[in-house]
Length: 363
Image (cartoon, rainbow, N blue to C red):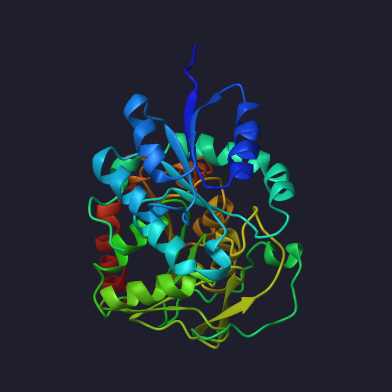
């Protein structure tokens, strides 16, 4: 008989502890073994029984959630789900938690909290199940702590998921690299982008992230990398030495102007439950770049990007999937591999060199 996933909930709100506990307890495979109103109480309870997953708030008395998270990750790395309302008013704190090793984030609203948590019960259960499978050994040992996009009318699901057409030029002087990632991706992208030279081909990236996080994430990477990294703006050109990250809450598509590539940042429906969506980006790259692109799918839960990578592969692009051993969550790469979308499967440590080699071959 498979053992249950043991969960601890650390939140100063009695309502959150009650509603989340009730939601998780409905799943026969999950057991809430402890709740705590702040990290100091949680530390005492950890001495008695250590959970498989911790659901953690950030703003709490006596010790903030980020300090507690860092303590947990330094002593006994454990999958942590951040459940916080700071996405709206203090995104830096939540981003710091992701950088410290949190597996995923659930953003709580400030109003209508009980209804939100009850409506999100299935999502919370799925987040716990996914977190329990996370490969924390794939996280780096040392964790370190734009302009508003122009708005276009929403485009339809059909338009966003329209399959690629033979419209891509067979070969152009401009080539590019497209990357899609989710859970564990903030650390993976830092590992990859910090190893690239300023001469690397232009890069377009979708990292599943809530609105307001991507600008800070891009600024952090920009301070660490030789290449320029920034949150994408509508109409930005894809050029060597620059990585464009899709803004949270907006889709990013590739377009072509002559032989040059630009990005369109636009509103639209959730695709595969995400906005931005990797599939939206990859399918547009397949359509407008085809064999002029390298597509890479990395760590993340779910299957967003798998079908898009297959379209890239079928359009003549070179395609790479991150291997299971180096993924925090193998979901997205696994689904792409199942579809036959990946030409190569490789560990995270080899992806930067593959990108550099692709750049050299394009010169």
